[in-house]
Image (cartoon, rainbow, N blue to C red; front, side):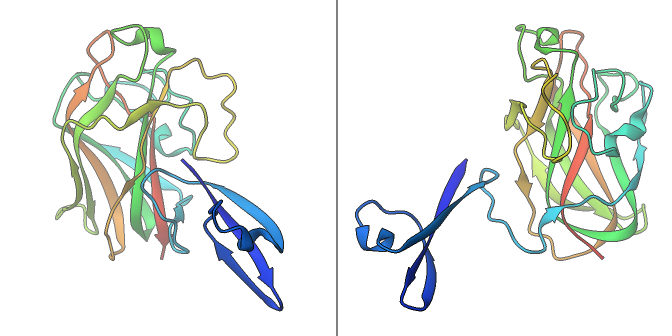
Length: 222
């Protein structure tokens, strides 16, 4: 989704307005138009940006090599076995994968990605697939007591990705095999050291498996 803001000047005053073709007076002293790339359903905040803090990946079980890459700031480097997390067995649920941060983080939104070599590895020959449909996002400061921040059932907010939420990740080589969720906002006022995604249901690939290639967090670090 895109939106625009018009900056206009009257005398010494500069103001902004949502463009309205019927209000031509606003454009008489037009300075510039700034077009944003907005995440669906989200209004940005100063303390609501991509969390780039490193973290240690943890999980309930693991059936693939390299699960630590779930927190390497790349959504497109997983192929369903490498560069991602998948449980053992790889169709098991409930299972979880999460991140321990060194310093507490207040997460106000999140996304997750799944990946395959390309979309033909999905049951109908195209994606998205191999992603969680029923899940919880939980947070903790001691790794024992967990607070549920978000719950989803029959989640279908997944799309074939053509660009990454990480600004420096190259996406030109993707072959319709990178699947990215919508941004999911969380009304969270607390800082936590650990966050985990608990998967209880999923949409499988051709082999009946699912995976997570990246956990993407928005918010502010302590």
